[in-house]
Length: 329
Length: 286
Image (tube, rainbow over all chains, first blue to last red):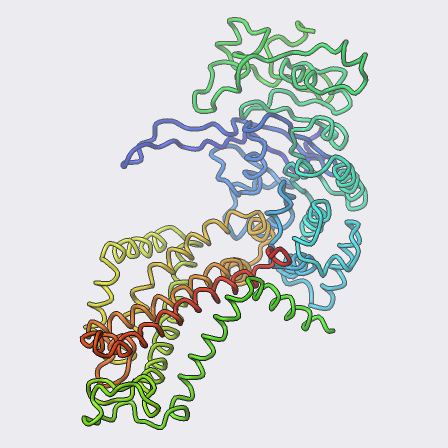
């Protein structure tokens, strides 16, 4: 990945929530929700972020959109630092970054018809007249595979998949360049998941969109993403090409995640070697010293307890943060 | 059938889905409204005309509920009392609800210093017993109709602000509000088009519930002698006047009392039904 192609470049992004106690609001520590995360989203590509619940995937996405306050780092969009902008400067970039939400129920106003939901976003920047906007709304509905009649329905009259399509159409109404998909399919049936994923890939080809695809389902991520970022406890532990993910994972955490995917075939399932991680994900308040993964890592030694490993490039589109690269298989 | 007709039909269907009790409440409420509007046509008596020869007259064909101590026709005074009750309660609820919703919206949406100030004021007022508060304000504002409206609406303000504040805080967390912010939709649009309509059903129920309780409050104040001044008829003062003769002429206290009960009850039931009918998520489920 070269800098020139990067639409979005996240550099050392940190989100630390202060922990206060008592009436005086004395700071007693902080939650490292996202800690020194760097990655790039090239134009027209999909970058996946995977990790357990609570590892900071969603917070990363929200920090890029300035919905939560980032305590450190820079987010370059088309070469400009979004986090350093004041509200006025940010306004020009706001609509270029959009989000698709996880919950198709909470993401649509229950009192608004689908067409009106899309239209409201469409006319917000004042580029459209009412009649032209109506035509564009129908165009957007068709684009996401909905018929025009669905525009007349309220959210509670639609299925989960239809709602998610309306959510996608709303994001597209802003003519975005980057869409942050925050687990867009995890609340849907498996059959609907595939439809939405295919729709997203189709739209990407047609409109040249870039996606930051946040998910916890590796199979889904591998299907849609070009590069997968594996996150653990607010840190990136591995950046890997999606095609290589199954064949050449290097970080023990990635290996453990992959080994947890069930296999349909009975004999393959019997032969499958499972890496079972001990214990729970540590609290981001009592951050472990050294490598964040060392309390659960089967390969951890003294060095892992003391030193935080850096992300080291080990191949094309492949970076790993581990002291034991190459030593473990 | 046009779309509008379908809409009205489904509204009415949900509204009356609780059955008999809602029909009864509607009828009771309508009777009181009609009585209040057409009071001079229904009764030919003057509500304030004193006729000492008919003092404490028994119910008869001329005076169906009898006469009070000063010989005034109780039935007529009930009709005119309905005017006072309805005007005071509706006006004070409107004033309280509108002010409360505006302040609650500001406090909830902006939070920060302004929000903190509004909510601390609410805490302050809630620390004073509401009845005491209303009595004090009522005494300051005077014994007029508008004085009562002012006192009652002021007293119910904290409830409206708090409810709206809570609603806005929870609605604000919804992804659809976040999406609108990402799309750069202006704040006033988010507030007026999304936060307000979504908070509205809850506020409406609170409004109708408060209609009932402000009738109660008005009656209580009149009962205590702080409300509308004599000789203007008010149900509360009628109960207060009549209860000294509760064994001699039970109708004097009971009739206005029952009127208060019926009106408050019917308003509460109508409020609940309205909530059911307005919420699209409940459509077809009741």
